[in-house]
Image (cartoon, rainbow, N blue to C red):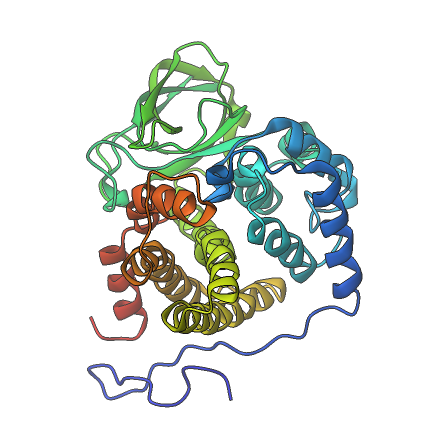
Length: 394
């Protein structure tokens, strides 16, 4: 029976609200596809700095991304007419799972493949699709998402950055913040207020913005470990042509929130700390420490459950459904798991975090960066509010 059908809460009217996580079978070629990806990893991925294998979907390596694209392992579910490979969403899931589980440096192309290309397929013009999607599928065009602003983070509907009509085009002004990979991206999908005086989620529009357009300034935000993932992006009278608009004017909120299911439910939502789990398993097998063995078992069972839930969302999306509630649940539970892994490893195993032991190196890296996991894609408080509203509890 699908998860969520038993014991689901009743809303104020006494009606039972349900959510569904039903199993989906992997495609018949799953084993062969896994071996193809593993062979690619053996040929193209060096050990390098082991700490870079943690949270790897935010680690940029353009050479690796281009090689992955050349091997046909980016843009799997995109149409062939735009450089994709017309494969299923579950086949794409298999590829992502294999890459993330070993800590492959997939950050450069990640957002473009996950969100930019699908958004353009759904809402973009034919010209936009032909201009940008083939480069995305080749691992050569990178994207970023312009949502959060200094006073509009979790409360995204309060964005103030503006887009005003100027003849046949648009002029953008404002600021975006916490913009992942803006410093390497070629294009941004940005959310702007396209009607002066409008409030909340009314009259917002999305724009496709080449980041080499005059008037755009990108400034780095360096994190605790000295890494550069986030950025501030400033727009000062940035002029765009009329066809920079994505979808319908004033429908940006609906388009952006639909896109968030792609961001919240993928395997990256529970695999950011998986290389540490793998190293823990090795440590437990070598040491025979009962506490380490028990912890490895706990992590394995939790990861397997999250995987089944994430796969269920992927399967429903492949069928054209929009399981936004279920995607939000996966994101929240996955983030809790990812953040707990390094903390529990440190509590159970005596580690010298300044040593070059692989377990210690990975734990030290993740202890520093994992607090941010529950911020990206929506804070925990906002997500739980979405879940409560979806279940009729508020």
